[in-house]
Image (spheres, rainbow, N blue to C red):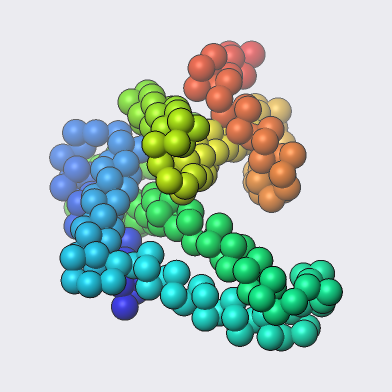
Length: 247
């Protein structure tokens, strides 16, 4: 129930937050998307807090589901064969599957944040087009022009370093916080890297569809994602897109 509520809020909160900023034109489209994302994140935090105060928290509920799912899957010989665990005992399979699911669900907060950001971005485009019929609004620039605000970049970098230090020094009992920050960190810089790739393809007169395919392929493979991450970091620090456009 709580997850359905969270998904509903991810869809609704940006619609409630962004229109007044779009109408006033007081901020850039990217900053307004950031406002929508922050509003969504705040709503999600409230849901998590409400779930904890009302009894069993969301993560506790998910943990119970994980144990049940892992126990059922461990009994399935086809699953064991597929995952290369045919020689392991049922107890060992259950433990391994539980750890696997735990690692996946551990980054759920970061996944929800990223989903909220993507939804806010898409909804800005839709809302701005609708409002443009009556008001003069700022349209979303081409994605190749995208760049994170300096404050967002410094904020993510600071939170990443803090979470890494606190996890490394044992302040946190597990590495869940670091895993979430690491995922957000990678996403932020990888998205920036995608915009650089699209800008480079645009300046080299590569067909738009081909540029998108290149970016998607790079995103889908590990080496490509790492390349996007590094490119994004260099762009935010050294201004690669500005240099590319200046050629």
